[in-house]
Length: 409
Image (cartoon, rainbow, N blue to C red; front, side, top):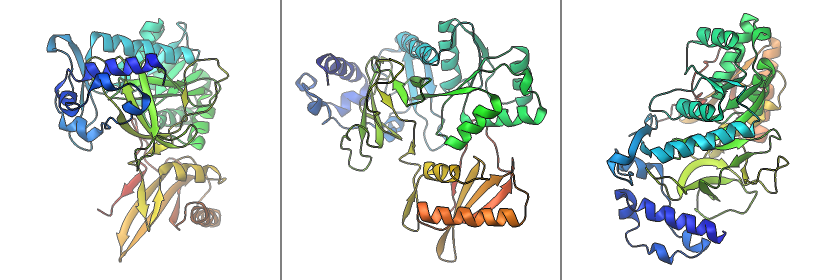
């Protein structure tokens, strides 16, 4: 860790303890005594439960009159997390987002079609603020109303699509069904909010005729826009003038060496409204070695593999959705879309894997099911019940796709 980075981190900690949450958490810590990377790594982690316990505004580290906006996590799995923003926080976020667009070689001549949600969720307004700072035309659609999305895409000659991978796929499929691909002017897609597999990526790119870029972020740390892939598709550059990140072993909390897969931990360096120190994102990735061909002097993390809390255990075998993505991408005839159902019946766990295929029901789909079961057993370790379904039979989402349904509890 360079001395200037340590100074930034110490300032961030001093800013954080102005709020009730960190004032209590770090009450016995001598911040001026943090003089090395090792000293910093002795600080406790912050987790989402801590943020929920601080509801509604326990994270706030500045007076009320300096807060200009709040955002929130969805709260679908418990108490929502409220993140307050100062004017500078909002401006810094827009600067980072503009940098994301520029990394994808998007310019002020582009027309940016924004489908992520607005409101308490951070996505839509982040995409818009970055586009406006860039000087590009923002088309703030928000999610849903696919008919209108496609009409506006055609009429406004949108060149960049911003979406979750699930909604980008849904739009691609609808455009193909309507036979209007020749009327679409899209050149690039900026995709975020959820992990997605190579087969899904290829389908979206091919069906929309676009080059795809991964954008990274989370509500607790500004929102999307703190990291972005470039045209070389070798990980996502992280804006380390605004954040400091570590990769840890999710079980032990120990720091992992470059190139080893682990959990991403983030410390904000400039955030005023709700600074976070050593925040466990639960996103699984690794620090990419070497410098990128694009020349950007920002370190890269790999495409998100999944989440440490997405893991399920079936018959003693640990399974991540990304493992299923990788497996299905190697089997011809299997689409990118699948769902896993886990049940406990007659005293044992049963994993059913539904996957889409364009093959007609019959002998060929039965053979394909056997192939999927055999490959799943060989590469993941247990035998599922594989069920082939027709294309478009599995549900599509305007937000994030839920692929694993664990009915055992």
